[in-house]
Length: 182
Image 1 (tube, rainbow, N blue to C red):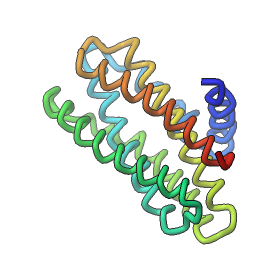
Image 2 (image 1 turned 45 degrees about the vertical axis):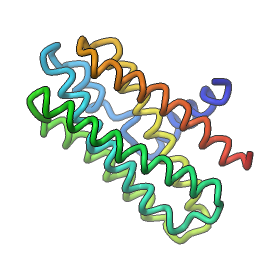
Image 3 (image 1 turned 135 degrees about the vertical axis):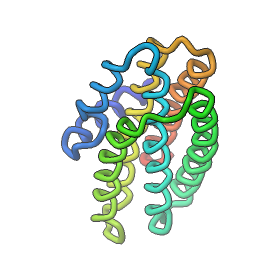
């Protein structure tokens, strides 16, 4: 946990600088204004493009990853995104489907992250760009899940939110260690 505070501080600063979803008021406004009846669908609908695009960020970066530890980290992150997306989509189906407007809000932000990474693909700093963008997205996942833990009444959604919060926190700490060469 000691490593998480500096990482989240960095993610917030980078999110502001890069315009990532971590600081996008539309995302937080949608979460705040969702009614109790629609909150779970709003939360899960945001996670779909968020996780799909994080997977895509990994796919785009992986051919340029030279460090074996970073490659393993990215592959693990991508496998986790695939599994979580299956679970999220199952929950959404049980709750009556997604919220397209909410998905679009997140997708716009994730497209900006993909654009940011694509500008540096093949350049010497691509590892840092990837780490910065993905760190911001890990922090966003944690924050979205913290809100869900406060607002949701659905046991399955609460359990998912707990696993996301805890898993993304651990994943962020692991990324920081990889970036530090440990």
